[in-house]
Length: 427
Image (tube, rainbow, N blue to C red; front, side, top):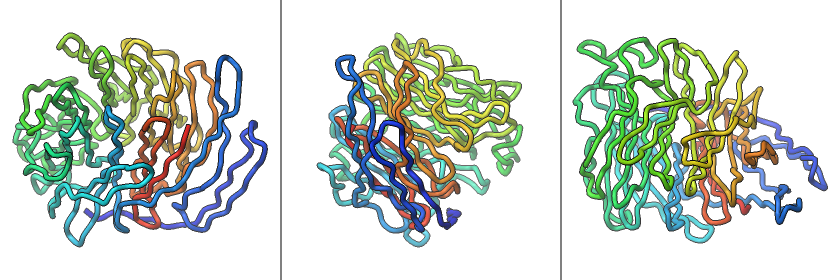
């Protein structure tokens, strides 16, 4: 699938954060160039405010010059994996690399095809559970624009070899299936996805997925390391059509968040949890009351440690764009009040990671700028600072972030270079 690439020039300014000893202005005529600079953050230690040095540094990307759709994953053992898609003529190639120290390993192919649905927002993913790996991509199932399947492939030798991919869902409909989340779950994997089996009937395959037809649903399944589906549930029978899902594991069990859709077209973020082998009823994380007639293509993200949960999402009630963060201390059963970390020019495309203690790092985009801030449940916000510049075009995709020990790892699509770029930072 062809990508829409938009080039341009930009001026980037990093100003005094109010806690720094200096101000640095950098002018760049190449969009997508990483801003390599030292940044100061405040941190709390023993109840006394101190200054923590936070250094961002670019890494040599393992991806080819025609690459996009990055995704980052950190295993329970601290292994960081990066997956992405490269275009080789008419062939789409899904590859991955492992972070070794501060360098990426040589790319390893997962699968390839000439009939894939390659989309800026509905990107492939990879996850690992010890030496058991799982990955997914999307493949066209019919002539309709949004007729495609989720295909899963697995590996039992840490990604050295991969099984022949199988279709995740068994409805047999030429409809939209995607926006997957992959999560290690016991010795298996939990797979969450948006399922369009109820959106189409005979003769409806060519309808735009933003139209008012049948309803998109949220489903989940437990999949074995060999790719066999062990159980399956419908979690919500009416959801937003094309926003990413997100899943994490707490001490109480899995938690899943997604953009819901009411009958009055309110599309706020909802949460479901698996408690004592039973899924809870969907409930809002917070009632933004964002009423919008079509899908905003802007899903939430979450991070969990024990029963600490942090969620970030984009919303736009009353046409006021904003990125919010909430925290939970009980595995997502209840949440505090939202903390607004961005507003005005933000276009969302968020990510979030819990740091040491209760703080979280959150990223979002403002135009083509990828921003980072550090947030505490008390409402304190340190930042924002600039990670990199790309573009607000769809082809720039969704920037990614993950955590390894005391490091944050970033990946994004440089829209001018048409290449996946990476960086890391200590915190």
